[in-house]
Length: 80
Length: 174
Image (cartoon, rainbow over all chains, first blue to last red; front, top):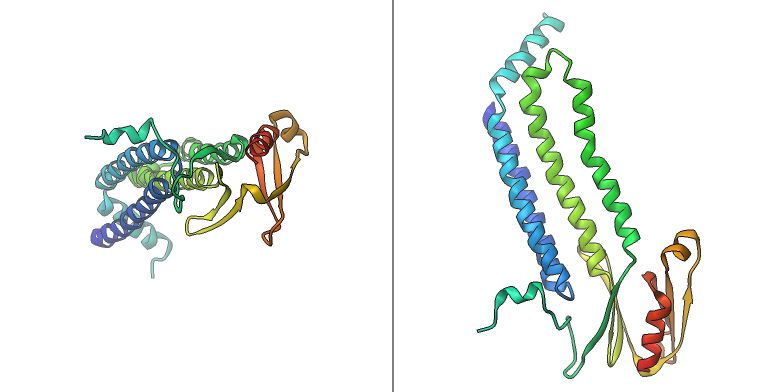
């Protein structure tokens, strides 16, 4: 079951990275002056930080414990 | 060898489809007030998970779900980070460029939708400035409308800071 969440997480990360690329490309390719380049650099650093943070947070989630808790609750409320 | 890092502090303000001998004189964007509004809204959204945390931390199930909660918060922050820079990108790419030959209006509507109008300086007939409203008067921003002799007609650029000064610079180059 944990693999399903891993695949979902990887899809979210892939979409995120694609969008990061689009924004950086637009800022560098079409931005006029040095300000867009500075912003693109800040965005890149921040995106990398949030990317690592999301991976670290995902690794901390105990899926088995959560699924066990949910299944127990389901049994309580729907015993049949 | 040119220093690649120099793109962060020096720029000739070159742009797409620049003509040979064309020099950029002025690059202006919308007033920061419009960027501030969207940044303020995103900062408010960033506070929501922490406010929500104070309500749910007392529940018995929180200990089991806390890791999942903070994981979902990081995903939420990924989205907010993208939203913040999406707004910044739209703001930065929407520009009015004045060169020694032309006046160029670039309006970035979404990431993959932009409008670009060019107007030769010698065809400009009249420039009008419109400042209306409390914030516009107080913060000195407004709209500039440029009337031309050709078939292009009129184009306008909204929410520019110091519109009178921009008008003076354009008129001095005519």
